[in-house]
Image 1 (cartoon, helix red, strand yellow):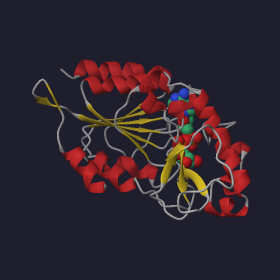
Image 2 (image 1 turned 180 degrees about the vertical axis):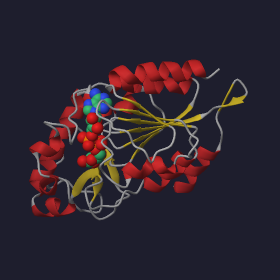
Image 3 (image 1 turned 45 degrees about the vertical axis):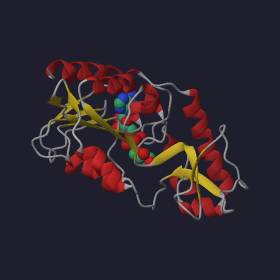
Image 4 (image 1 turned 90 degrees about the vertical axis):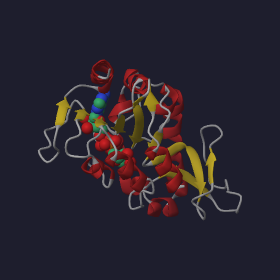
Length: 249
Ligand code: APR
């Protein structure tokens, strides 16, 4: 599977006979905040209302599966009620002139619904469930709820297709490879507090222009060629996308 993704990445995309530059867009919860989906660490964020160890670890799921499934059922309802915002739509527009790879920590499908064609989810997808015995058995969730008693084809309980705290991030290696090939790297709406995802930018080459759009972002001295735009995604991203499209002849 990884080989297939790597081949997709190695094959250059062309427009008008010219090889397209590769833009990697790395997003966090701030990307979807203006669509009405809670962030985690802002004031009033999800981790102020719920303890991580109660709802977002494998131990929590073993201890109280109903509580954990209910927490994610609420998240799923919120996602199903949300629509892509101006920033999601602008990122999709970049595909007019660039080979765009979205790498998101978000579990919603708003990038896909906005029209982005290559989206890699580092922390899973809320609209899917998976088997607790075979991680390759992944299913779309029909409706908004996943309940205790719903089983995979091998008879084991289904769990949300989410990467919990303490679990490996299976898509990380592919994300690092995609990032290492980037010509431009955008970071949008993430506190860069959760590893290994927060370290992704380290895989972008030093000379690559990097932009960080987040109203609360602080300077990050160890990242070369980083321009910080202290704005909300809905305001900052459409302007940045317009500039990148204009600059690319
Ligand atoms: N536009 C852009 N950025 C915003 C906006 C907005 N409208 N609103 C808030 N932000 C920024 C905040 O300033 C903050 O830096 O979004 C960031 C959200 O940070 P977190 O809540 O920590 O979310 P994130 O970085 O995505 O969390 C990473 O932590 O709990 C886990 O698995 C979860 O994927 C998540 C990971």
